[in-house]
Amino acid sequence: MEIGGCCLPKDTKQLRANYEDVTNNLISAIVDANRTRKDHIAEMIIKKQPKTVGVYRLTMETNFDNFRQSSIQGVMKRIKGKGIPVIVYEPNLKEETFYNSEVIKDFEEFKKRSDLIITNRMHKELKDVEYKVYTRDLYGRIEGKLIKQKPLFSFLILHYQTEKDTVDCINSILKNIDYDNYNIVVVDNGSPNISGQKIKEKYKSKKNIKVIISDKNLGFAKGNNLGFKYIKENYNSDFIVMINNDTIIEDGNFLNKISEEYQKERFDILGPKIISLVDNQNQNPVEFTFENIKQVKKYIYKIKLILFLEYIYLRKPIKNFFKIIKRKKHENKKNLNTKLHGSCLIFSKDYIKQYDGLYDKTFMYGEEDILYFIAKRDNLIMRYSNKATIYHKEASATDSVLNKERRKRIFIYKNQIKSLTELYKLMKESEERTD
Image (cartoon, rainbow, N blue to C red; front, side, top):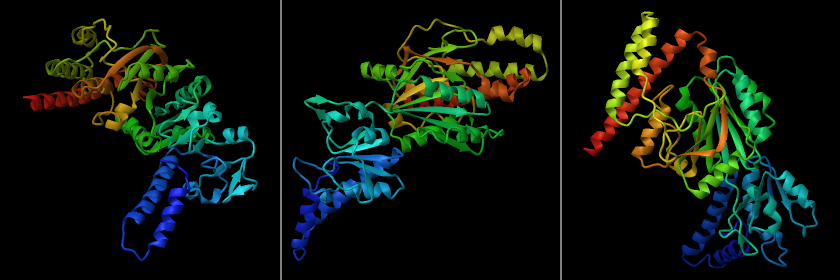
C-alpha cells in the first residue's frame, strides 16, 4: 500500500458523495480504511522520534502535478501535530512552502537535514541514505535490485554514580562506531550524586541519545528493563546492545559485524569477545554453568555458610573455604547455546518481540545464570562470536558504593543467594510442568 497516492482517496470520497442517498457500508469502509492507514503510518514515524521528517516527492506518477490531491498531506498533518518539523523535496513545485512546510530545492541539503525520509517508492538517488528511508514499498526495488535498509541498533547503558565511566562509554560509541543507524539510551539507576542529570545535560544536543532518570535504584535487571521497554515502545529497533557503563568499544565495525553474524546465522542473544582490562582475558563464553537444580541448591548452602563466616570475622577460614565452594572450571569451547557474560548482551528482534528485557526478580548478580536457563527452557538461540570485541573495566559501579572489601563481599554474597534462589524456583517450576 502506498504512503501517498491520490486516486483511491479522492475517487472513493467522490463516490461516497455521489451515492450518499444509497444505503451502503462498503464505500465508507474504504474511506475509513484510508484514514486508518494514514494514522498508522504517522504513528510509526512519530515512534522513531525524528527531529525533522523529509517528504521525498509529492508526485506519485509521471507527469502528475496535482500535488494537493496527494494523501501524503494527511500524514504530514499528523506528524506536524506532534511538533515535528516536516520539509519537502519536490523539484516540480515552484512555491517556497507546501501547506506551511518548507520546500527544499537542493537535494543534498534535503538529505542532510532529514532525520527520516518518507517516500512512496524507493529511488536510486536515496540509496546513500536508505537507512533514513521510511517507505511502504513492499518490494523496495531500485532498477530490479532489492534495497535493504540498515538494521536499527539501540545501545542500552545502565548508569549508576560513576559519571566518568558512562561518559567514556558513550564517547567511545560516538567516536568509533562507523554506522549511521543507531541510538543510545542511558538509564540513570537512581544515582544519589545527580550524575544522571549531568549526563543528560551534557548530551542534550545529541538527537540520538536519550537519558532516562529513575527516581530509585531498581537493580541491574529492572534498571535495564526500564530502558529495554522504552526502546521497544519508541524505536522499533532490530537489535538492542545492552552494555555495562564501564565498557569501551574501539571497533568501528562493531555493529556491522553483529548484523553480518545475524544474516549468516540468526540468534536470539549474542555475546561478543569481552576483554577484561584487569587481566586482559576474554570473559566470553562464561566457564561456569548450573546444569541442574541440585547444583544450584548445593551452591546456595555453601554461599550461606561463607556469608555466616564473613559476619563473624573468620577471614582465614573463609580463604580456605573458597577452595571448597569454587565452582569447577571447564574449558568452554562452545559457541552455540552457551552462557554469556552480562557486561555485553546483544538481543535480536526475535528476542525483543517475545520479552521485555531480563528476568526482573533479582537485584544484582545471577542474571547470566537465569538468562542461560530461560534460553534453554524456551529454546532460544544463544551464541558467542569472536568477530566483534568490547573492553570491560569491571565492577566500577559496585566499587563506587562499596569501597570497603568486607562490605562488598557481604553485598555480593547476599545478592547471590537471592538471585540463585530465584533460579532454583524457576528450575523447580520447570520440572513440575514437565512431570
